[in-house]
Image 1 (cartoon, one colour):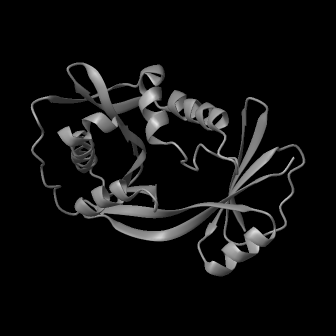
Image 2: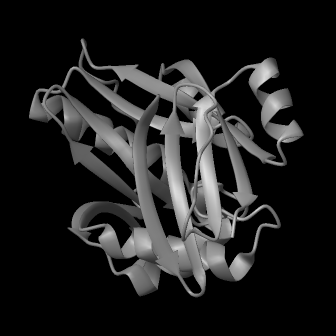
Length: 222
């Protein structure tokens, strides 16, 4: 069953994004590329690849419980965390470096950088307010936290690699958890790549539970 479907046009590419419960006979009358997300299994991976689809990633749902107040983390005095309107142009160089190969943006089998960056720019343009981390006024990271009925979602987050040792990522996530708790949310959810070990370790440190593995496949269809 098809549960989500949207189409994105960047440059000369028309990209179909699908979330499905099982393999179907999809038709793409105008799209040039397609990305399909399916529940992870060895059989699904084998069948999709036999149909010419390229396996791109396995993502995991993350859930951080807020039944108790989140533990406060000591934030370096060098770091300034605040909520502000995100400047997409300012955030792009850092995000482009951090998200290289990320299948949310790199939707072609050959990992086209130009298309990946174009998709990323659209994502950043859709971010309104975000938590930002600055060091001496320089943007060191950002986190988009979206409020839902009883949970908050970390939709997009990136930090500049050169500032990670200063604790920029942990600071952003800690403030985000406290914000969600203050909103009255019961949990903070998200979805991450299983290939991103550093992010998985960060979520594990924050007490996250991992579930619902999803495999991502892509194919040129037009």
